[in-house]
Length: 343
Ligand code: SP5
Ligand code: ZN
Figure 1 (tube, helix red, strand yellow):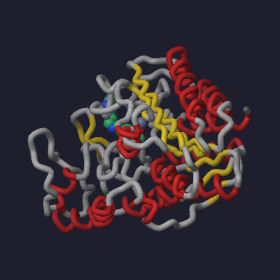
Figure 2 (tube, helix red, strand yellow):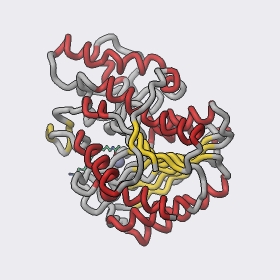
Figure 3 (cartoon, helix red, strand yellow):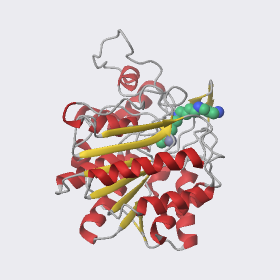
């Protein structure tokens, strides 16, 4: 299986995220992608290639132009106001507030985000444009190269980012950008399977009113888990999209027995939809030793997830999302990909 990777991801190297009441070094750090890449090479998964530059048009198909423009200059504006530290928001337009876009950088950070765990740094812009290109290059290879599957080793991740919101370590929604690109190049129906531990709220929000992109997410129950305010089972889509959004929230402590049944149900929904192509939001923060998550999957379970996804027999783009158990992130991610390859 071909892997798409760019070293530009290292430019996203925040100093702090706000978590558990403390400013801590971010769990989402460069070593994550480096460990995945090392494991890809160690097992000989296949060739590793750099991304092509697709420009910003494919990004603007799923993100608002003002949001993209904000991200481009956010750190420069922050630096002018506060000095060369990471930019973090501190307040948000919640219930009862108006949604007017403020002028100041502090106000706009809050307007365009929904958490304080996602630092904008001097290198963020280059890292996120490159990460989107990594996803798009994978999509192009799937379409034009005729590969059975491609692995886009994206970093920063993307699935929490909505049309005009960043958070959850995500800025551009890489999987959504790639899905829309495939739609724009003729794929009539596209399915997205999100196996990251956290609900893919951004992907859901982007495609919620559409029947041409099916979104299926297996994740920690929002009553207990980030992002808290979306991801319930009764969110099934709206308008034309009614019936094309599938959430399977599961409680803390979920292990393979429960997880595998949910996975089989999700895969059956995708098979019934009859997509031309499948994209997998591949997070491995469902792992038992993940430092910020509470599922209990074992390393061998990822091999089996890959096998079951392969049974759909669809051209498949794997897009890297979360996973914070640094020592096992490579093993778990590549187990899933190798399980797919072997099936
Ligand atoms: C892409 C992705 O996986 N983003 C996840 C962002 C999660 N950010 C909030 C984490 C809150 C974790 N709270 C529990 C900490 C345990 N000490
Ligand atoms: Zn996650």
